[in-house]
Image (cartoon, rainbow, N blue to C red; front, side, top):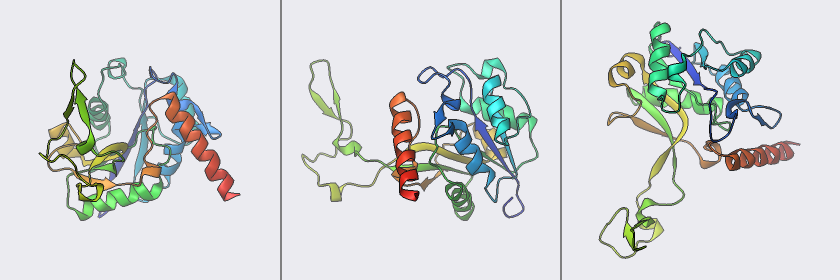
Length: 233
């Protein structure tokens, strides 16, 4: 709770991942991928209730082992490849409607910390925003990116009518890192999105912004966790 307003945390984790089979419960540094998000979210000083939305019995079992509540099983029609996270959140809010804010925490962000979560909530409140999402500064600027046509000729993605730009002259650009999405419940139910012209961005460092989407991402995450463990020792 913050400023007398209640916050519902939702971890969406369906079982039908195609890129990495069983992704949400694949082992990472000694525990299931899902567990990293549950443990950090449970330590938040603002989240009043943390629930899992899943259609998969194995994922549900793992979530319960790590202390995450599973008040219902996600309907199969909301666990398809084309099902959107918006539909999943709206489904949760239909069943759990006694909250002022909803925060979505995807299990594919194992480096997101409790401080990231709580600071994002505080930032959203401070900005008096209806919605806030986490972002990270991009490593490669889109001002240096190109399309390639059928004849392999390059066309600028963003044309500033300048043949060359120094890195220090380019505006900073940010991309969604998938770690944190927060919105007022009523606003979300009306807009049916976390992203609008009203949404503010909460910047996270690149080292905590890895989003697990491929086997390579999982291997990279394992290497980083191993290095962190070595440094702590």
